[in-house]
Length: 358
Picture 1 (cartoon, rainbow, N blue to C red):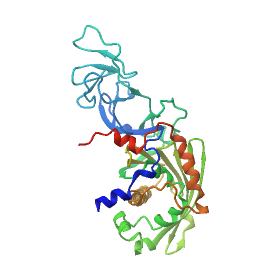
Picture 2: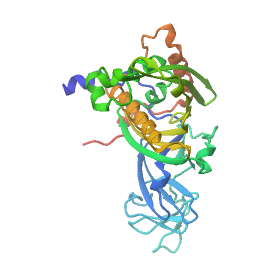
Picture 3: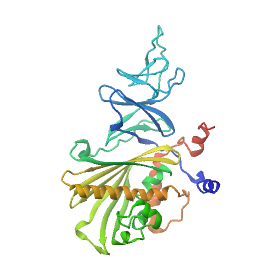
């Protein structure tokens, strides 16, 4: 069985595995002042740390002296990170070595690579580009979140065993909405995996989706109207209107307005490997929204995403899928997403060739 699975999941049709752009690597809440966190992402080993001025910094993880991992017992000292092995210190701003405790002169050439980073929407992002080009766009802020006007009410994290592009492509796959997401959120993930929602819970309440996909620059958008039904009768008073936006290759923001108030869901996609994505989902709600409705929408977001993960974890990626004319947004999406790849963007083979396994 394992051998047939490896054949079925062949990487032959995969695009490059790590896109260019702002990549979320860590939640802001996980990085305390004067603390060091180890990060594995985009095929790299990195360290993140926050200096006393509350500014986050990201560097390559390995000390250029003798290769010690700065995230293993490394510590923040002033505006530097100190290697635990010999006490060499590297400045947070530019990675330059500023201190060697037993040397009369600090080697001018000693330096650790630093990563340009941004902090917003509850995450720390790094700019990754295979050609080392500087940022050509910025992550768009959501004022309700940055101002603190809307409160974070939930968080959940999942892993998806698929290509990073598959996550955002969901927004352009209009046809899947009225199939996999039709049964109500009262159907648990375990129940859905067993019978695809064909139970009394799935029939008692269901959803119908109207959606349209578009793109502009580095942003893609899916406008969405959700019509809930009970026993086949649509409840117009509870119609939800909103939209998904893909802000670059690895961040999705869903905004919705309901009769109970608004909410924003932020999903960060961190490529852990060629076919492994870490998905962290944060929900922010308008303060006036009743507690019970917050919980209902949060449950819905989680279970709907878990349904997608069931499919993502087993699907293959076809270079030339059999698409109907009604599915032209998928073709348009793939053309849009290709802007995040460049000549030297790493392929699955590149990553495997540079991975040490015993």
